[in-house]
Image (cartoon, rainbow, N blue to C red; front, side):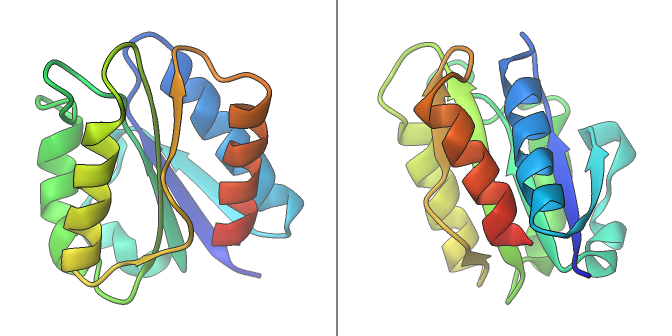
Length: 140
């Protein structure tokens, strides 16, 4: 049984909903799933998991949340090489540039992205819900 971590930050609850759906998809595919917020997860824990889903909404000028999530993620970057990673998050404006930049960062750090990042405008529904579950299953 694979072990999957779902690590997310959510300001409005939209990305939390996505995290729950990613976890649901991973569990449905037979994985053991642990869900964390940035304050409860550190780079030291990465080796404990076969795959990790990181979730963060777009903030400001399409960037990661910079007070809690980004510092945690920056510490994890050194451990991304050859790790199965999935990315997800919601946005309220823009075109998803933050996700493309985040994917590029992960790839340049040697991560194996199991699929393109899952994004949704505001709360997940319909296709976005299914894509979150598919991401979780792909990580499992």
